[in-house]
Image (tube, rainbow, N blue to C red; front, side):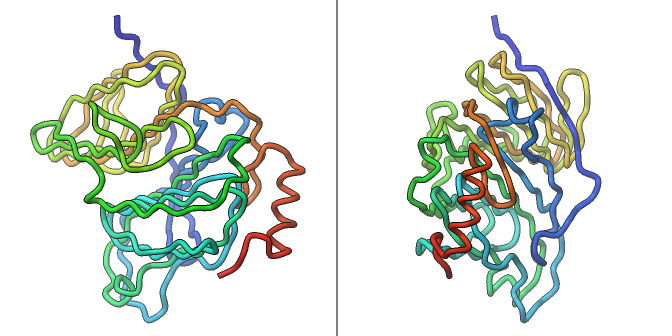
Length: 288
């Protein structure tokens, strides 16, 4: 008999805040002692919902800053982001692309609207997700994965509905992202109302972000900019999406280790956080 995962938490953010001058975001996921058990291995999620930007001679974005102990994943839906980092990684991601940066032992990077997008202006829509690294991998070498939309498998769900496998597996299709722990990341876009049935391993954590439209589950309707966090127990998640709906689904095996997050660093102890700040200030994470 199919055992369903039940919703543990659901919430939305009413107000947006600026990250630099290029990313106007809803902060929809943050590490807390209460949430960590149900969101691990995911740490933070910011959603830059669609926003029109005017033509600009100066690129908007976030200047040079460090990370350690995590991976930052940026999903481009509208607009373009240019990235460069102290490990030599860099590139421009465009609509449908994904940028997966492993900070590991320490990296410095910046993120700006691309030159072309700045020249033309337009609608900008992005998600940035932080993925935790297990203790044994926190000091791994930094690396950068630029994942093109053409390399992301697309599975038809019928009636102008499709699911993209960004990481992990779905119905035998494997996503292109290399991950340190078992993770499934999908996004679903549909023009028409559709019933969706998903199955995950019991004991894993699952999160759904509604970017556009509505989602009906457990006889409740959740609107856009809502995030749903599920219990670990159970495997199935069945829901119905509305016309013109877009959602992001995160599922992963939890990393059951202590989390200490401060600013751009996510480690296991306060001492490791202090060491991260010291290493950054002493130039051990490199520079641009």
